[in-house]
Image (cartoon, rainbow, N blue to C red; front, top):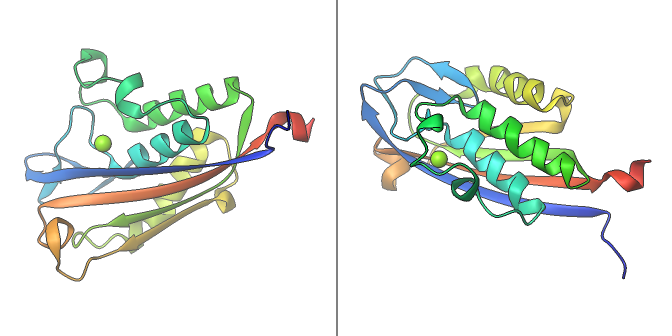
Length: 166
Ligand code: MG
């Protein structure tokens, strides 16, 4: 049977933004009066990318691998979750070609922090930063991403069979 040499994965995540939580996105802590509510640090971008990686390999989702009932992941640095998902990807014979992600939030303004997020993600995945794209959007005041009550992130990842590269 013909085995595909490339596979695509898609990920989505959303978190409530509440007072008293640090705002963490793409592994970067950003000054803001609210932060994502979650069992881990609530890093929506990193969760979306992690889910996309698992999706590309048909390995289920983040919640199945890292249940929010597990105290091990309480307030966890989500870059650690991403690293674990990447390890699974590699173990199944796939390497990341590129990642493209979009974050939707009204505030804070993310553009100044995007280079740091790309660096943090590239670093944990051991990839050239040129393979990691992060885009920041608002929803023009509409819905939960527009009224400040939430944040959403979407990601797609292309993985390539390691056997193809050997
Ligand atoms: Mg999440």
